[in-house]
Length: 278
Image 1 (cartoon, rainbow, N blue to C red):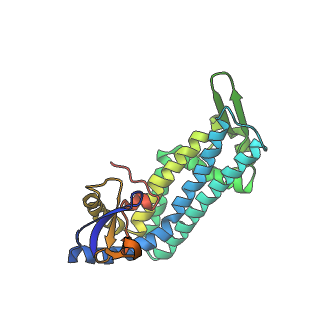
Image 2 (image 1 turned 90 degrees about the vertical axis):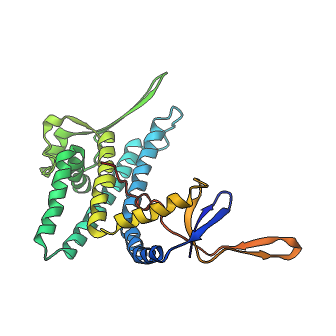
Image 3 (image 1 turned 135 degrees about the vertical axis):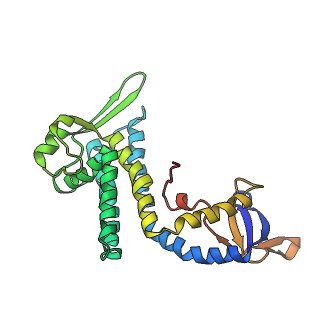
Protein backbone atom coordinates (compact mmCIF):
# COMPACT_ATOMS: atom_id res chain seq x y z
CA UNK A 1 0.00 0.00 0.00
CA UNK A 2 1.42 3.37 -1.04
CA UNK A 3 0.83 6.90 0.14
CA UNK A 4 -0.15 9.18 -2.73
CA UNK A 5 -2.04 12.23 -3.91
CA UNK A 6 -4.69 12.72 -6.56
CA UNK A 7 -5.92 15.93 -8.13
CA UNK A 8 -9.43 15.13 -9.36
CA UNK A 9 -9.55 18.31 -11.46
CA UNK A 10 -6.40 17.66 -13.49
CA UNK A 11 -6.35 13.86 -13.01
CA UNK A 12 -2.70 14.19 -11.97
CA UNK A 13 -1.46 11.74 -9.34
CA UNK A 14 1.74 11.12 -7.40
CA UNK A 15 2.87 7.94 -5.72
CA UNK A 16 4.96 9.23 -2.84
CA UNK A 17 6.18 6.25 -0.86
CA UNK A 18 5.24 2.90 0.61
CA UNK A 19 3.32 3.02 3.85
CA UNK A 20 5.21 1.68 6.85
CA UNK A 21 3.96 -1.41 8.74
CA UNK A 22 3.04 0.86 11.67
CA UNK A 23 1.01 3.15 9.38
CA UNK A 24 -0.79 0.18 7.85
CA UNK A 25 -1.57 -1.13 11.31
CA UNK A 26 -3.02 2.20 12.40
CA UNK A 27 -5.08 2.48 9.21
CA UNK A 28 -6.52 -0.99 9.86
CA UNK A 29 -7.30 -0.01 13.46
CA UNK A 30 -8.92 3.33 12.60
CA UNK A 31 -10.95 2.27 9.55
CA UNK A 32 -13.92 0.63 11.38
CA UNK A 33 -14.02 3.50 13.89
CA UNK A 34 -14.16 6.08 11.08
CA UNK A 35 -16.84 4.12 9.21
CA UNK A 36 -19.09 3.85 12.27
CA UNK A 37 -18.52 7.49 13.18
CA UNK A 38 -19.37 8.59 9.65
CA UNK A 39 -22.61 6.60 9.75
CA UNK A 40 -23.63 7.94 13.17
CA UNK A 41 -22.41 11.51 12.85
CA UNK A 42 -23.82 12.06 9.38
CA UNK A 43 -26.83 13.46 11.25
CA UNK A 44 -24.88 16.66 11.84
CA UNK A 45 -24.15 17.04 8.14
CA UNK A 46 -27.85 16.65 7.42
CA UNK A 47 -28.68 19.21 10.10
CA UNK A 48 -26.31 21.64 8.44
CA UNK A 49 -28.08 21.09 5.12
CA UNK A 50 -31.36 22.07 6.77
CA UNK A 51 -29.69 25.17 8.17
CA UNK A 52 -28.28 26.02 4.72
CA UNK A 53 -31.83 25.75 3.30
CA UNK A 54 -32.98 28.28 5.92
CA UNK A 55 -30.09 30.62 5.09
CA UNK A 56 -30.68 30.28 1.34
CA UNK A 57 -34.27 31.46 1.73
CA UNK A 58 -33.13 34.38 3.88
CA UNK A 59 -30.71 35.36 1.11
CA UNK A 60 -33.59 35.29 -1.37
CA UNK A 61 -35.56 37.62 0.86
CA UNK A 62 -32.59 39.97 1.04
CA UNK A 63 -32.33 40.17 -2.74
CA UNK A 64 -33.75 43.32 -4.34
CA UNK A 65 -34.95 41.09 -7.22
CA UNK A 66 -36.98 38.82 -4.96
CA UNK A 67 -40.49 38.21 -6.23
CA UNK A 68 -42.96 36.62 -3.86
CA UNK A 69 -44.33 33.40 -5.38
CA UNK A 70 -45.97 32.09 -2.22
CA UNK A 71 -46.70 32.97 1.39
CA UNK A 72 -43.43 34.07 3.01
CA UNK A 73 -44.69 33.23 6.50
CA UNK A 74 -45.58 29.69 5.47
CA UNK A 75 -42.16 29.09 3.91
CA UNK A 76 -40.30 30.51 6.90
CA UNK A 77 -42.31 28.39 9.32
CA UNK A 78 -41.80 25.29 7.17
CA UNK A 79 -38.02 25.74 7.07
CA UNK A 80 -37.88 26.55 10.77
CA UNK A 81 -39.93 23.47 11.70
CA UNK A 82 -37.74 21.25 9.49
CA UNK A 83 -34.61 22.53 11.18
CA UNK A 84 -35.90 22.35 14.76
CA UNK A 85 -37.38 18.88 14.25
CA UNK A 86 -34.12 17.53 12.87
CA UNK A 87 -32.11 19.12 15.69
CA UNK A 88 -34.44 17.46 18.20
CA UNK A 89 -34.11 14.11 16.40
CA UNK A 90 -30.33 14.30 16.78
CA UNK A 91 -30.57 15.00 20.49
CA UNK A 92 -33.10 12.20 20.99
CA UNK A 93 -30.92 9.79 19.01
CA UNK A 94 -27.81 10.40 21.08
CA UNK A 95 -29.62 10.73 24.39
CA UNK A 96 -31.14 7.28 23.88
CA UNK A 97 -27.79 5.90 22.74
CA UNK A 98 -26.15 7.48 25.76
CA UNK A 99 -28.61 5.83 28.17
CA UNK A 100 -28.19 2.46 26.45
CA UNK A 101 -24.39 2.58 26.49
CA UNK A 102 -24.01 3.90 30.03
CA UNK A 103 -27.19 2.62 31.70
CA UNK A 104 -25.15 1.15 34.57
CA UNK A 105 -22.95 4.20 34.95
CA UNK A 106 -24.79 6.95 36.81
CA UNK A 107 -21.74 9.19 36.68
CA UNK A 108 -21.68 9.13 32.87
CA UNK A 109 -25.40 9.84 32.65
CA UNK A 110 -24.98 12.82 34.94
CA UNK A 111 -22.07 14.06 32.82
CA UNK A 112 -24.37 14.34 29.81
CA UNK A 113 -26.96 16.40 31.65
CA UNK A 114 -24.20 18.53 33.20
CA UNK A 115 -22.83 19.16 29.71
CA UNK A 116 -26.22 20.37 28.44
CA UNK A 117 -26.59 22.62 31.48
CA UNK A 118 -23.15 24.15 30.86
CA UNK A 119 -23.96 24.94 27.23
CA UNK A 120 -27.33 26.40 28.22
CA UNK A 121 -25.66 28.58 30.85
CA UNK A 122 -23.07 29.81 28.36
CA UNK A 123 -25.52 30.33 25.47
CA UNK A 124 -29.06 31.58 26.06
CA UNK A 125 -29.98 31.02 22.38
CA UNK A 126 -29.08 27.33 22.78
CA UNK A 127 -31.25 27.05 25.90
CA UNK A 128 -34.09 28.95 24.24
CA UNK A 129 -34.14 26.81 21.10
CA UNK A 130 -34.23 23.62 23.20
CA UNK A 131 -37.44 24.97 24.79
CA UNK A 132 -38.72 26.63 21.61
CA UNK A 133 -38.56 23.37 19.71
CA UNK A 134 -41.23 21.91 22.00
CA UNK A 135 -43.43 24.96 21.51
CA UNK A 136 -43.18 24.80 17.71
CA UNK A 137 -43.92 21.08 17.57
CA UNK A 138 -46.73 20.95 20.14
CA UNK A 139 -48.25 24.41 20.61
CA UNK A 140 -48.08 26.76 17.64
CA UNK A 141 -46.08 28.24 14.80
CA UNK A 142 -42.76 29.67 15.84
CA UNK A 143 -42.62 32.89 13.87
CA UNK A 144 -44.77 35.63 15.32
CA UNK A 145 -43.86 38.36 12.84
CA UNK A 146 -41.80 38.73 9.70
CA UNK A 147 -41.18 41.97 7.87
CA UNK A 148 -39.28 42.73 4.67
CA UNK A 149 -38.31 46.36 4.06
CA UNK A 150 -37.07 47.51 0.66
CA UNK A 151 -35.75 50.98 -0.04
CA UNK A 152 -33.45 52.58 -2.61
CA UNK A 153 -30.28 51.56 -0.77
CA UNK A 154 -30.93 48.27 1.00
CA UNK A 155 -33.20 45.37 1.85
CA UNK A 156 -33.72 44.30 5.46
CA UNK A 157 -35.74 41.52 7.04
CA UNK A 158 -37.05 40.96 10.55
CA UNK A 159 -38.18 37.55 11.80
CA UNK A 160 -39.30 37.53 15.40
CA UNK A 161 -41.13 35.60 18.08
CA UNK A 162 -43.04 37.41 20.81
CA UNK A 163 -41.96 36.33 24.31
CA UNK A 164 -45.26 37.51 25.80
CA UNK A 165 -47.24 35.27 23.45
CA UNK A 166 -44.91 32.31 23.95
CA UNK A 167 -45.16 32.51 27.73
CA UNK A 168 -48.94 32.93 27.56
CA UNK A 169 -49.27 29.81 25.39
CA UNK A 170 -46.83 27.54 27.23
CA UNK A 171 -45.08 27.15 30.58
CA UNK A 172 -42.36 24.87 29.20
CA UNK A 173 -39.37 27.23 29.37
CA UNK A 174 -37.28 25.38 31.93
CA UNK A 175 -33.88 25.75 30.30
CA UNK A 176 -34.18 29.32 29.02
CA UNK A 177 -36.31 30.72 31.88
CA UNK A 178 -38.16 32.80 29.27
CA UNK A 179 -40.30 35.68 30.57
CA UNK A 180 -42.36 38.42 28.97
CA UNK A 181 -39.53 40.84 29.67
CA UNK A 182 -37.57 39.31 26.77
CA UNK A 183 -39.90 41.14 24.37
CA UNK A 184 -39.53 40.41 20.68
CA UNK A 185 -36.88 37.76 20.05
CA UNK A 186 -34.95 38.11 16.79
CA UNK A 187 -34.84 34.55 15.49
CA UNK A 188 -32.16 34.87 12.81
CA UNK A 189 -29.22 35.46 15.20
CA UNK A 190 -30.69 33.09 17.79
CA UNK A 191 -30.91 30.20 15.32
CA UNK A 192 -27.43 30.99 14.01
CA UNK A 193 -25.96 30.81 17.54
CA UNK A 194 -27.85 27.58 18.27
CA UNK A 195 -26.51 26.00 15.09
CA UNK A 196 -22.95 26.98 15.97
CA UNK A 197 -23.35 25.34 19.37
CA UNK A 198 -24.78 22.18 17.79
CA UNK A 199 -21.84 21.83 15.39
CA UNK A 200 -19.04 23.08 17.62
CA UNK A 201 -20.15 21.97 21.10
CA UNK A 202 -22.80 19.24 20.97
CA UNK A 203 -21.30 17.35 18.01
CA UNK A 204 -17.80 17.51 19.48
CA UNK A 205 -19.06 16.21 22.83
CA UNK A 206 -20.87 13.32 21.16
CA UNK A 207 -17.81 12.44 19.10
CA UNK A 208 -15.56 12.41 22.17
CA UNK A 209 -17.95 10.25 24.18
CA UNK A 210 -18.85 7.69 21.52
CA UNK A 211 -15.66 7.71 19.46
CA UNK A 212 -12.70 8.69 21.67
CA UNK A 213 -10.32 7.22 19.09
CA UNK A 214 -11.27 9.88 16.52
CA UNK A 215 -8.76 12.41 17.82
CA UNK A 216 -5.85 10.02 17.24
CA UNK A 217 -7.29 8.99 13.88
CA UNK A 218 -7.67 12.61 12.77
CA UNK A 219 -4.07 13.41 13.72
CA UNK A 220 -2.80 10.28 11.93
CA UNK A 221 -4.53 11.06 8.63
CA UNK A 222 -3.75 14.78 8.90
CA UNK A 223 0.00 14.07 9.13
CA UNK A 224 -0.15 11.91 6.01
CA UNK A 225 -2.29 14.54 4.25
CA UNK A 226 0.29 17.27 4.83
CA UNK A 227 2.99 15.03 3.38
CA UNK A 228 0.90 13.96 0.39
CA UNK A 229 -0.24 17.48 -0.53
CA UNK A 230 3.20 19.09 -0.26
CA UNK A 231 3.60 19.25 -4.06
CA UNK A 232 0.01 19.98 -4.98
CA UNK A 233 -2.13 21.66 -2.28
CA UNK A 234 -5.24 21.21 -4.47
CA UNK A 235 -4.90 17.44 -4.48
CA UNK A 236 -6.19 15.05 -1.83
CA UNK A 237 -4.30 12.35 0.00
CA UNK A 238 -5.11 8.79 -1.09
CA UNK A 239 -3.76 5.29 -0.61
CA UNK A 240 -2.72 3.38 -3.73
CA UNK A 241 -3.00 -0.40 -3.61
CA UNK A 242 0.26 -1.18 -5.37
CA UNK A 243 1.60 1.03 -8.13
CA UNK A 244 -0.65 2.48 -10.86
CA UNK A 245 -0.20 0.58 -14.11
CA UNK A 246 0.00 2.17 -17.55
CA UNK A 247 -1.55 0.02 -20.27
CA UNK A 248 -1.06 0.44 -24.02
CA UNK A 249 -4.25 0.57 -26.06
CA UNK A 250 -4.90 0.33 -29.77
CA UNK A 251 -3.79 3.32 -31.75
CA UNK A 252 -0.99 4.17 -29.35
CA UNK A 253 -3.38 5.37 -26.64
CA UNK A 254 -2.57 4.71 -23.02
CA UNK A 255 -4.77 4.11 -20.01
CA UNK A 256 -3.88 4.15 -16.35
CA UNK A 257 -5.24 1.56 -13.96
CA UNK A 258 -5.54 3.18 -10.53
CA UNK A 259 -6.47 0.97 -7.61
CA UNK A 260 -6.88 3.46 -4.78
CA UNK A 261 -8.68 4.11 -1.53
CA UNK A 262 -10.13 7.49 -0.58
CA UNK A 263 -9.18 7.89 3.08
CA UNK A 264 -9.94 10.80 5.42
CA UNK A 265 -7.92 13.98 4.93
CA UNK A 266 -9.61 16.33 7.40
CA UNK A 267 -11.55 13.80 9.43
CA UNK A 268 -13.65 16.07 11.64
CA UNK A 269 -14.56 18.37 8.77
CA UNK A 270 -15.63 15.38 6.68
CA UNK A 271 -17.79 14.24 9.59
CA UNK A 272 -19.50 17.64 9.66
CA UNK A 273 -17.94 18.65 13.00
CA UNK A 274 -16.14 21.93 13.55
CA UNK A 275 -13.30 21.80 16.06
CA UNK A 276 -12.37 25.20 17.49
CA UNK A 277 -8.90 25.90 18.77
CA UNK A 278 -8.65 26.75 22.44
